[in-house]
Image (cartoon, rainbow, N blue to C red):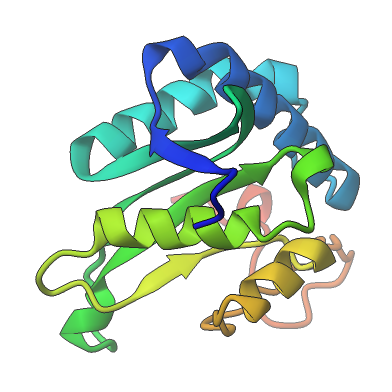
Length: 179
């Protein structure tokens, strides 16, 4: 860890900085994809959710320099029941959010936050650390790859276009015959 950077567990005193970071992160993602709601609209509920999840099985960490908020990371243990995956893939450490204030970017703060959350989430049986990024978030993707992450699954999407013809044999629910 850099001698100038301190990483510690988040406290109630950090709540306003965390909320502000979530708003900024959400607004950044809104510029990248139209599925994101306004930061002010979701910040309180979202912060409550990640605080709760982190308290259950994870951690929420704050990075600071000389007492000033620099960023945060939150994560927890996820469990799935994916029939097609190995047991060590069904239970993994998940980083839900990571944020570094703009004036501190490019100083490997994200890498230090990821290392710290990994140490917090390391426990017997946990062999994988996962995180997600919007496909258009080139800066995050670059930082994650530089830190040793590689793509695991990629989700594609496209808008559904309603067509007049039902060429695949599917019925429009409104046109289904009545019993």
